[in-house]
Image 1 (tube, rainbow, N blue to C red):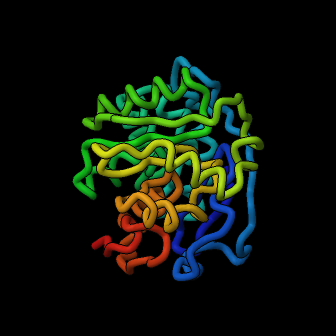
Image 2 (image 1 turned 90 degrees about the vertical axis):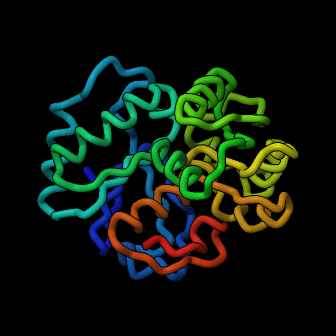
Length: 241
């Protein structure tokens, strides 16, 4: 079932923490529960072998009842570890079952980087090295060269990822910078990246893309919301239509 339904009809099934707060200019787009932090548990295993159709059919049927324009699947690592083909296939199947445009976190990162015309990145996440390896491979298969990456050096669960404070996220992003990187990617919907975007962009002098920011950008684009959202990175500061 949707964990959060936006008033502009953007239901969001999420597997971990969504933004701890939302851009003020987007407040007209979200539910009346301002600033709520909502956690659910994904039913998708770490490495699934097929489409969990009965589960998703019931969830998509629920989404159809509120006639959404866009659905967001908010877990980056679940898609990064399965590859671009699986990611695109999942989005297509959710769209087919729900009738709504569908955005995945990993697909949104790709879309954001393509929008900015970036091909070389620094990659930062709270994932373990093995997942980062798969993330880098996913991005390489999508046309992006990871020239530097940084990790937290510990195994964090969803709550541990969300417990990283903005300073820790900033330092993680700084560690992923490289002279050849055209942008920094902060991957993970659970991580409090939104509070560090502006500071990190100012420090490195290049765009910073985060999972949740990228999903909001693509979802608002698909929903026909074109206004810029200043203060949350170069990506959201540009008009989308």
